[in-house]
Image (cartoon, rainbow over all chains, first blue to last red):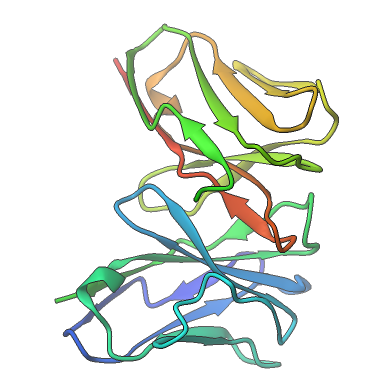
Length: 114
Length: 110
């Protein structure tokens, strides 16, 4: 597609439930990034992929967060046993290259944990 | 700790005023990017600066990359309400991935 498509737009989960977010990158883009934005400001890097391979996962909370980018499927970010502090907007971005190239962002998924 | 420090965190000004926001780091970057995010949307790239000392202009926006490639500034002349948004700088992180600063939230009042 011509734009990064994130689904769902909004997601509400009870504390302890699982949440799964999806991202379809722009066709032809090799890199996918996931970010968490809390309180409408700070962008926290979570994980990046080069095609289906994890490139950098240093931002991922190890215990409950996982992500995949499988061939011919949307990328996914899954949170097991959600906590209140996981409430945030999760943005996915894709780019053709890794550095000095424009990252195109989706509109985000707003996760609310109640 | 943030790789990129942005200041101020919040800025509220009247239409027609000028402003400058800053993006600073102790690290040297091969390039820095500036993005603007509007409510309910993802960030959109404004500019990429690559060369130390580089100045780029985009209408009323002027971007500067520091000589040492550790900092950058964004200056807006005669701000308009349409400039309202979150301005983010981004650069190469320690693991060679793109990292963002915390952003400057700009509000321009009519």
